[in-house]
Image (cartoon, rainbow, N blue to C red):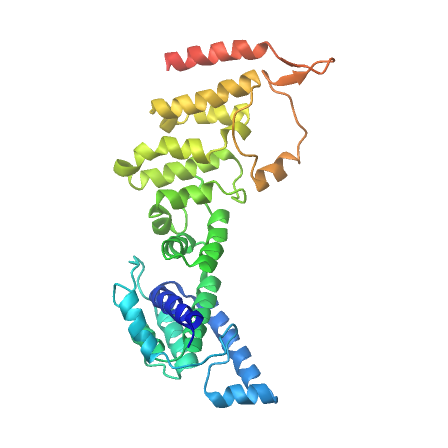
Length: 345
């Protein structure tokens, strides 16, 4: 067995261990359906009347896609894994807050039956049994776990699954969960369906989602509301992070005066000197028609903006006949009135 198989085994066992710990908690009816579809397709391929399929069926290997041709027994490789991995090979490192469900148990049993023809194994027993089986069986189980979890992603669990997949560096699952998170970010109109998962996001995870161009929000105020909801879940530790999150995630340079005025009157902004300065800078820049450094508008916001004609605002920059840029003097008056209003507040 060459080094490629050893690396495939080590990464496969590591992923399977984490995935089998997550599967009984997040798998739903859609995940079970995805499992059944893959198993049926594999069964049909294994019984096709061709010499290659007959050889595969007779070898005792599991006919799932993306398998290595080498089907060597991995008893010795389990020892390698035990030496290379500091913790117990069958002990998942990620701590889940969600309980195990009956559908989740059924999914584990279905994978154990499909890959090892033994449905009496729990997730830990299945991990150990796979580790002394074959490399192809380990990768087949990984493939089934990923398919079931990806199909199970929905608004009620997307943030929990995203957090798990990000911490465990399981990129295909992270991408699937991330897409759902971007479409169901809590924006203040109502709580997120996966309240616990959203509130437990790490700061860098929240930042990566809120900075995405594909984040589906009606305006940047919604992004600010999402940050507020996350901070309120643990204010003692997160309030100090709010300024950086707003500066790095809310694209204030794309907001119009109405949105900036709404933000300026938000209790969170009025209670924080740092947030007041951030919003005030964007507001004054908009009034004076000066550019602020920010990314472009998000996809959905751009689409909505094109539905209405552009309307000049007070203080916006306009082009002179000679081609030079001049500024509406009304903007200076607006700045003075804004500063006086904020000083009084």
